[in-house]
Length: 279
Image (cartoon, rainbow, N blue to C red; front, top):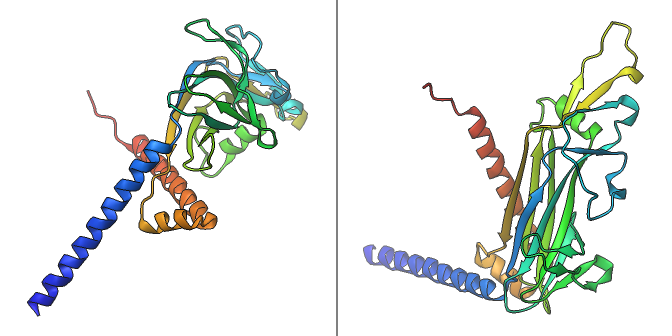
C-alpha cells in the first residue's frame, strides 16, 4: 500500500516538474520571438483641455499655453470632451521588424525630443487596420488625447457608490512580429484624473439650462504605463496555441486581463482604506 502511494506521489511530482519545464521553455521561446518595443512617455500636459469634439483636433496638438484659469462649461455644452495631451516615443530595441497596432495613440512627423533628429511616421503595412511597421533601431513619435465627455464624468460622480477618480481612460499599443501573428505583446497607457467640479447654482428657481460645471486648470492627474506579454500559464494554453484554437486563446487572454484588473482594483481599495499612521 505504501509503495503504491509513494509511486503515485513520484508520478505526480514528475508530472508537475514536466509541466513547469514545458512552461519555462515556452516562456523562453516567447521572449526570443516577441517584439522588443520600448514605449516612453516624454511629456504630458497636466491641465485639461476642453473641446466640442477632440477627435477633430489635429495631431500633433497645437501649442498649449499653461492655463491658470478654470473653464466654466454651461449645461448645453456638457457633450464636450475634457482631454489631456500625452506625447511619447516608440523604439524598436530588437533585431527584427515589428508591426504596431494603435487603439488611441496617433503617429506624427517631428523631431526627437532629446536628440532633435527628424523622425517620420512609420510606414503603413496593413491599411485596413492602420498597422505600422517599425524597423530595428527605428524611433517613432506619438501623441494621444486621453478623453472623456463631461457627461461621462458627471455620471461617474453620480454613481452609487461614486466612481473615483471620475475620469479614467486606457489607450493601447499592440505589437506583433513583422512576419507572423504570434507572439503578441502590448502596452497600455492609463490616465486617472478629477478635472470636473459641479457649480452649485444660486437661488431656488434654477432651470436646467442654468446649470454649469467647472473644469479645473489644476487638478489631480496620474499617468501610468504598463507592458504586457502573454505567457502560457498551463499546458492547456500551450495545446491551444499548437492547435491554433483562437477561441480558447481569446478566452485565456481575457481571463488574464480580468485578473489583472481585479488585482489593481483590490490594491487601490486597500490603499484607500489603509489607516494613516499618527505622527
